[in-house]
Image (cartoon, rainbow, N blue to C red; front, side, top):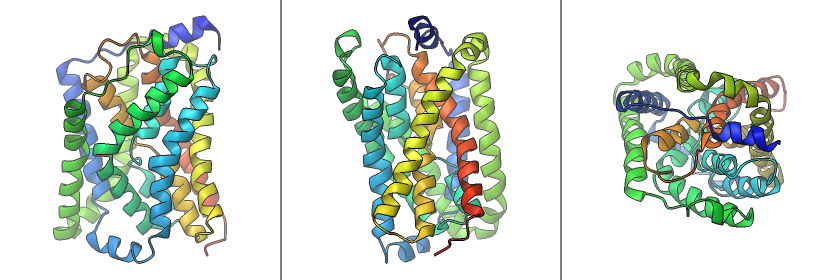
Length: 315
């Protein structure tokens, strides 16, 4: 990628006042509440009777994806900026995306496994998202040879923990309680909220980058390629691990979708609403990578789910 293109990407800025950031946080919490409406405690009992697929899903999403993303970012050194590489690692450190359960349903995958993995990754994100981002981000900066040109990656733990807990933890608990004690309400709200979340995220990205539209359009083809490769890696990890360990085909579908769909909305919230990158150079590359992932994984998820839907192997 040409240096002037990299500079134009990193120079993109998103300015949000307190009201704008609060709006994004409320929307994300509302979306996570919608995800949790499909979670019932009884689901976990059945899934954990055969924990192999659950453990593999956790391995794919919380260990292999951040690790291999770090390797991919290092391999792309010279073609992407360090901030774009950190954006890739931030996305990989986020929990499963809010539309993965819908994609699993469309793809005739194991819905119970999908819901369980979403719930587990979301609960563990309070601790593992900041840890994975710090660990793999620091390793990437040193491996890419740019550690001296960028401030040391220090995670404001309380700031990040508080944000993740409010945006993910509380809505998750409220959604599960609604599903358990108000099942009719949960059933009525579940699907509309899933579609609404897609529309809201796209609108959020458009509004956030509206003032930088020209710069974004100039670099989108480069961002498209980076996210395309990164997302293909994520999908391949899920399907590859499922195939390697010979789990049922429905479970392989779920592992593929769960690993390929990430909650990039949380990544945006952490960048824009915390002091995570205070003192850092312009990091438009991180913002654009994270935002475009949120749009692209809808396209790739629907594509993969449609392919699975038309595949007769349901064993």
